[in-house]
Length: 281
Length: 216
Image (cartoon, rainbow over all chains, first blue to last red; front, side):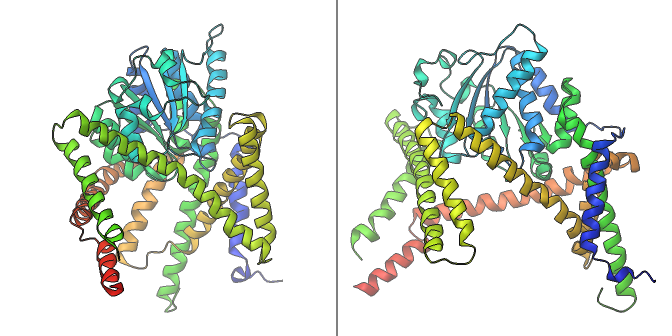
């Protein structure tokens, strides 16, 4: 019986290898050193530099697909801000972001209470929810100009004018810090409308593929720091001293990336070999 | 074409542009500021209505697929069932209700995450099959992509510690230069489109004008 490599279904072979590569570090954890990049470090330092009791805006665009990659950073950011007694205003300019605010708040409260026994997080004291706000960039500009005018009621139908936490919060000038959690597409309008206009500090939670976009704003100081994908979440978990799911997943993702790199090398060697032999591939 | 169809929308757009731009660049009276504020609130309200329009469109497209028994009409039934169920629970108990949240957290979230995760398998196969150094440009992209991927994983730093210096340079220098060029081009194009709208030189008005002449 002879072995013919050409007859192997390479697609299936690659899928099987990848499945094994992903599963092994989840079953048998492997110790791979975790490098901390400047974006995660900047993010951590920006959060730590927020003065106590600051009003923080938290805009969530994260939706189902990216949720497993970014949830850890999104929740731990809220926890750390609450530990600094910050007042968080949760809102979303994408309808898909709203249900995930539920998940961020519910889980962040659990983590907070586990880390700070005896302390609780209360609505209208530590946070408020404004729900979905339509209009994207135009809506955000108006939100920062006249928050209570654009959003007369909170997520639960309570008039925003009657919320104690928002008593002195009316415009972007009253929100010195903004967390912008994005999913797939970059939304630099947050930077345009908030950071450039009101000069507050802005940090972002984004998927790793947005590195080329975020780095441009990071270099100019418009974005103080960023969590880039699950690797960034793992780094933030480590920096904030709140180990969680991202640190457990990071090695599986790291080995999957290695798999992509190997596939790139093998594919190109095969291609060059084909070209040198005179064929098309 | 009547003046209402041809001229009035154009003048309205010009006036709105003037008000919005004026407030951005100059100190304007309070009345202009409040008009500007109202205009932006109108936009948010219109955008909210787009959600309703989107739902109606889904019902129309997939509803007709079910009625005509087109290919894969069973999936359309499933989609419409979930759409109406979700809307029903949303209307009955609000978006914070137990059943609405259960549906979202246990159907939508895992389904979306699964679809996104499956991409990982396709990426590996695409890396093997499609991402090839066929031209000089493709080779540059390949090398930059390869190094950036390597930098993004912990194991990449173990394989080559120097990656920590190389990739930040790629991201900060060539990437930033290219990105800024692109953003400046987009900004200039946006100003050009805005100016064309303001002066009624945009294709929309020219078409309206020409069809109006034809009709006349």
